[in-house]
Length: 218
Image (cartoon, rainbow, N blue to C red; front, side, top):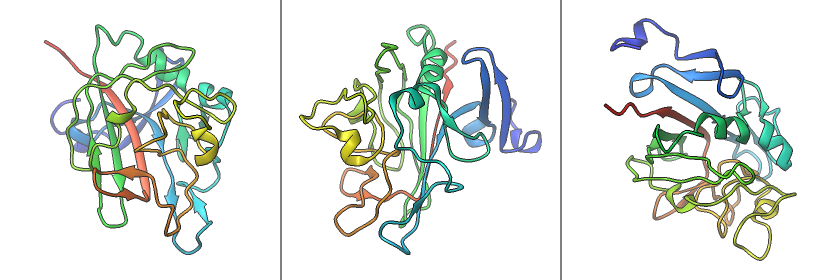
């Protein structure tokens, strides 16, 4: 996109993509642009312990396996692109590496980002993730989930005797159960503020955006 993308492109552009055969949302500004956004997550409210909303407050992320496979939400609001689309975008990951980024907002911290290297959602029936090294400022909440498969309330692929998806009322790459869980139900109480683990504390997250772009290897 060149060096001065902020002078040429708006922050987000909706484009058609032949890989997942659908429209995608592109972030043209962050770190030079070129990011495909596949999740925009919730905004919590501290005005009530049980009040939760996402960008527009009209998308429930506690959905079944089919919904997460096909995707849901809107490119102009809350969205999950879909596990099948994510798989199709990274299916050639052994030859084409991808950078994976999560942008977060905490109550105490304006923004945090991680960039594990080598995202590959393999095994299409379970959509497993692989990660490389971590870098960033938000604390490494995602590397723990490397090698895990997606779990939903109707398909349990985690390593726990119970269902992490059911207990969290979400869907994620659960192990036993999580350090990051950005698709969970956002209930904020003194004993339940989990959303992102920075290595010391679990934080309730007021905004999350997950995105990826191909790494150009010369």
